[in-house]
Every structure is written in structure tokens, then in C-alpha cells.
Image 1 (cartoon, rainbow, N blue to C red):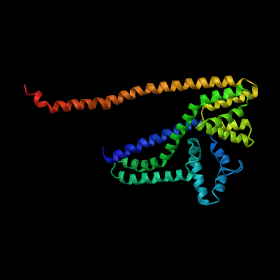
Image 2: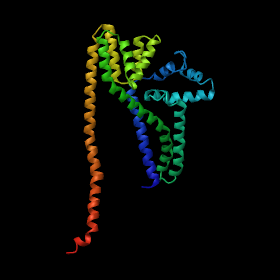
Image 3: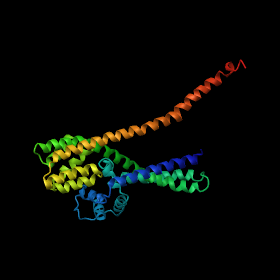
Length: 301
């Protein structure tokens, strides 16, 4: 394969991976469209929630027109939401992500300058456009992958947290006190979300508003079921501890089923590796031995 064809194949694979990350993230968000406004409202700017997104970002950037345009570009690209869902907003500044996207764009353009002329026919146009676009969207794909990993860790810690919350509720404590206990005792993404919820409660937010914000921050049915159970218990007086235990058992069954499915999918992959790598290597070793001893083997003929 020529170098241009190899670069084209790599660019195609990276573009498909980036598209998959974005599509999976949109499916997991399940219609949550206002998270970026919540990010602006609850960020460290201290602005009123009624301020518009553009005005909030311009004020947070100190009134600089250039910084305001950068902030609007970040909002348009959905970077604050991706950073929040990946859990990297405290460690990875937003300008660093924007610079990473620009660096990927220019890096892809430099590679395209060398690869596009060597590509045959109209593939050169695809290479010239695909490499910069792929470099631009690689940071998004990495953030979405980290967001999925964070969500898997959160869901994996949820059954134990539900059991602890059920014990707390059964002892006579309220849901707010149970959330505070989870925030103090736990670690990881779930404990971080619980600490945010406890901070909102301590600032005077109602339990319903806090639970709705928690559900918006963590897309998916697991936290939504927990929020719905707490709301039903508050409104209709249904026993919350039993609902939490049933939900924990259902999540554990779902986790076991997911592990079994991954194990079932691993068997064909292992067979493919054996068929494509191990068997040819063994055959090459046998062929090498036969060729090396061909004189002695054919001496009787």
C-alpha cells in the first residue's frame, strides 16, 4: 500500500471513530438540550440564571471581544458540555481544548499537503479534506470516550450506593441526608455528582430542583429511575427503601448480563486472532523447517 493510501485509510478510520463517539453521545443524552445553559448558570461566574449564554460568556471573559468570540465558538461546538460529562472540566481548561482542535486541524492540513498530491485520482480531494476534518474532531472523540468511561464507572457504583441509600432511608433519614452520606462516603463520578447535589441543597435549592438537575447532568435511565423513585415516595408516600433495593438488584442483573454479552462477543474475536495470526505463524515455522531440511527429505528421490 502506498503512503497516501495508508494515510487515507488512517484518516477514514479516525473519522469513523469520531463520528461514532458523537453519535453515541447524542443517543445517551436522550434529548437533554439545555445542559450548556445549566453549565453557565452553575459555573464559577456567579451570574444570574436569566442571563443569556452569549452575554454570560462575554461577561466571564472580561468583556474582551476576542475572548467572547472564542467562548461563543466553544458553546457552538458543545465543548463545555463534553468537558462536564467527561469529568475533566477542573483539569482541562476550555481554551486548551480549543487549541487542541486547532492543532489537530493544522496538523491534518500539513499531512494533507504531503498526502493529497500522491493520492490517485479524486481520492486526493478526499484526503485533502478528510485529514484536517479528522484532526479537528479528534479531541471531541477523545472527550466523548472519556465521558462514556466516566458514565460506566458511575453506573457500576450505583447498586452499592442504592443499597446504602436504602439503609439510610429505612433508618428514618430523609433522601437529602442519604445523598449527603453518599457524597461523604463514596469516591468516583457518582460521589462527585452527589457532592454537587448536596452543595445545591445547602445553597437553598429544593430537593425536586436538585434531583431534576442531577437527572439532567447524568443522562440515562439509571439516575432517572432513582430520581423518579424519590419523587414518588415524596408525593405519594410509597416505601422508598424497597424501591431502591429492587433497583439495585435490577442494575446488578443488568451488569451481569452485560458481562456475559461481552464474554460471548470476545470468543469470535479470539478465534479471528488465532486464525489470522497464530495459525499462519505456525505454518510459516513448519514451512521454514521443511525448506531448511529439503535436501535430506528429498535425498531418497
